[in-house]
Length: 358
Image 1 (cartoon, one colour):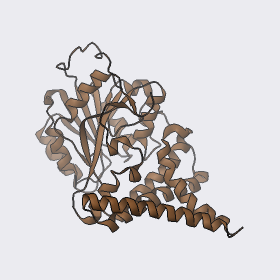
Image 2 (cartoon, helix red, strand yellow; image 1 turned 90 degrees about the vertical axis):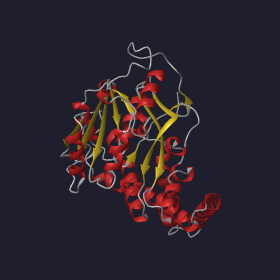
Image 3 (cartoon, rainbow, N blue to C red; image 1 turned 120 degrees about the horizontal axis):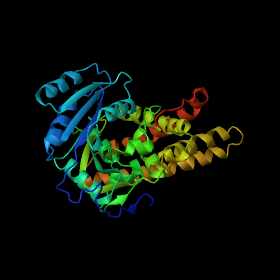
Image 4 (cartoon, rainbow, N blue to C red; image 1 turned 120 degrees about the vertical axis):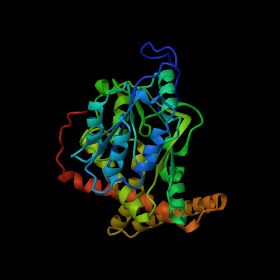
């Protein structure tokens, strides 16, 4: 199936013939300097309506230098099923692989400390994983912000809008179960990592997407469901948004470079690069002939017209600040595109390392 296809219902897995037979689960949550978010994340996990005796929670810390470790330790002392591991390599794929090696559960949940989860999150995903025979299953990831300023609310809206995130269905929402190319975070059958490999430790970003693409390309089944959701807290300033998306754009190119696979990502990940090139290349070619500059001007006018119309429409319907919306669209598109462009420039200086995980 392709992305967007309906995810067909199968028979129960592993001889478990009804949803009352609940498997053991391991929740793995990589953390690094998350003192602002970790307590709310932890409390939402502890509120899951899933038997605590079947749960194991592993936080893997990239050697935080704020209060993250201290806050987690207060929970470790209170709950015997919560553990804290060190990740001296800092980055997420190392953290996940370390957690997977320690995991005792039949299913593994990859969670993020920057997020909040409803009480039915685990129960619903486990039930649907059995029902759909999914190797990985996830749900819509709603974007939110802590501080409800005009700027933060505009960023939240842009990160949930098709013009901001393309056809990323787990961000813009679905109304029925589909088979997808990736899902946010995810609930994996543990044997997935034996069959398809671990997280690629070469990838500082995009490791989730690459793993899901690898699972899909080798015949695995990934489903996105509308039955529950999680909430991800976005960056709340244009500076933070630019920095984050610049790195995302750069790592789009580096992901393809390290994996030697153009299809380790989706087409939508490269659209901002095409947009930036549509502005820059005609300007460069205008040194050969001035008429090329008009192509850049046409591209800029078309783009600004589109985001102006979209921002006005959103501002009117949702009563948000027009200029904040307008700026947020520009920041997310330019930062992503310029990040991808920087990735192209640094590839000649990068050495391709072989990953033992893929």
